[in-house]
Image 1 (cartoon, rainbow, N blue to C red):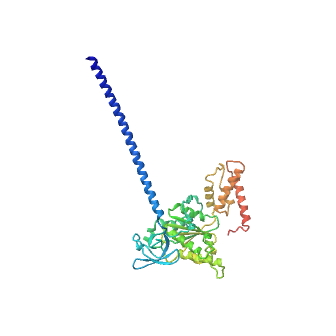
Image 2: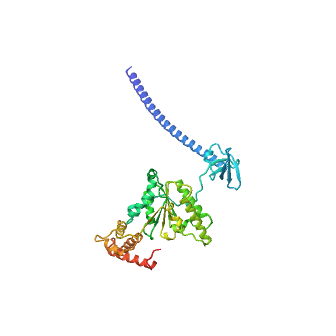
Image 3: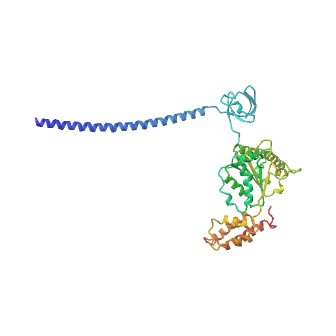
Length: 399
């Protein structure tokens, strides 16, 4: 019958629509479950890694502590004689994981607490004071920031930079590179500034030492510091050791001296040994700086220790003009400004003095609430610096 047929058709259409809707629902549900499965798998992997890390950490915490010792001697049968940090010497076995050829007298090792067997190689101890001497970040001073010292900088480059950058040239010619360079001159003439520029321009490790830091109150401590400074430089070669205020530790040795003087002399003798000792320094350059070369010990100045002596004099007119240009580069100066009147007034001034003049001129402008520095500010600044020098050095002689 027609009505029955139409009802069946409608029922069939409804069933088909329901089946299609339900199928799409199941597909969406399946995709959601697959996504959830992937998330759970990722979470499981993360938890497994975290569990493994915790187990490894727990194993480390369960391990017994090791004893530090120093190798005294290697025996023919493969065993080693070590001096324990607790005091006595032991004849111990060496773990198979350690190459016996790598162990040598004086090396620091770790011992198992029960069997006293050598289980690890340890790095040599480093004094925190020595590690602090290494310059991690290169100074922001380049050769272009130094005025009036073109000849001195050329000598410094040829003596320090060239052996580090092109050692093959010295091998080809068949000569040993200069072992050290000494910078001399009045205070403020740019000795330390030049060393900072070398640290900026080279990729070598730069180690800065103040001469007074090597003077210690306990016997042997100064010599130990000198030895460790050079060991650090050899480990991180190519390296440059800059010893500022060298006269603090390198002055003349006296026949009659106090106990403090004798300790300084011991430190000096260690320094002499490191500068030109039995063992080669390798790619380690030494730069010394002092404003009192007249009081240095003759043994320190002989060839083989400080082969080059570079004098940093007070700048001439051309040098002072360049120094003024460098230090006024970022200053807001009036358009009518001229350097020429300043050159005659700043005669016998060092580079540090000229920098102080520029700073004082800026301060005069600030004190008067001006944003521009005038020529007159520089005149007043030069007069103020000269008066300050006369108060400190009435005889106008630099020490």
